[in-house]
Length: 68
Image (cartoon, rainbow, N blue to C red; front, top):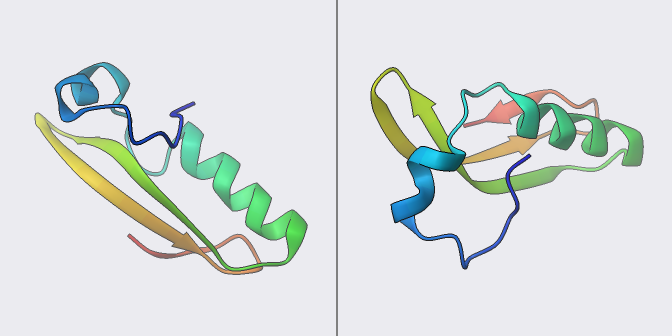
């Protein structure tokens, strides 16, 4: 799981990147659902093909990803 820690620099994105949806977004989805809250989870190093992105996601109280 990716820590939400600003000390992780972009030089480490390749090491920590994951596809979205993935392990981190599954955890965020469950947290939003179990607490019945809107949740904004970012920044997540995202791997999409051979590209890396700094991605933020948002979830509704049902745990659905409503923004990426």
